[in-house]
Amino acid sequence: MKDLARAKTYLRACIRDSLALDETPVASHAMLAWTEALWDEEPEQREEGLEVAKHLILKADKMALYVDYGYSRGMKEALYFARTAKVEGHPIIIEVRRIMHVREYGVSFVNAPEPKLIEGSSTKALA
Image 1 (cartoon, rainbow, N blue to C red):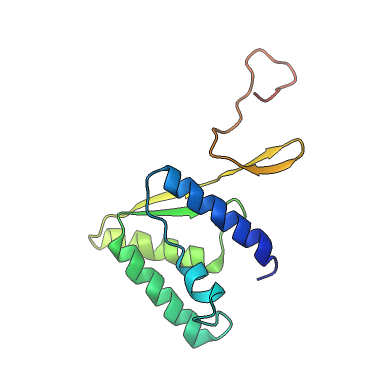
Image 2 (image 1 turned 60 degrees about the horizontal axis):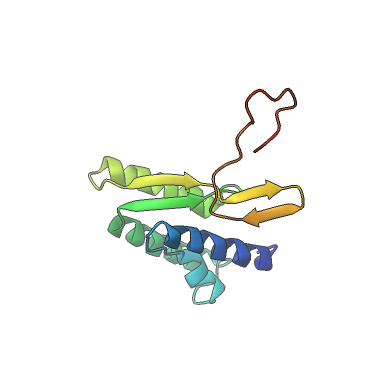
């Protein structure tokens, strides 16, 4: 991964957000690839990891995708699988989430509402 430190910081923020919503977060890619239990660069092991993710999806009632940095290939595959599983009779709620809120001095990972425009402002100031 290009910026593992950033990814780990982001993952911690995603997990904390999920816990704040009284959910049980599971990040299979972090568990399997970052611990080097499976090697992401090896096609057979990558497929094995995707199969694990599919089994987890089938056990879940909800799948949340945190997309502040976009969709990875694995996220796209998991999303497609979850939508297909829903069609085949296993209803899965799919939520797409963003938790980064850009502030004047950088990015903060806060479980806070999206900024809103201040009504009546000609400069479209953010609240």
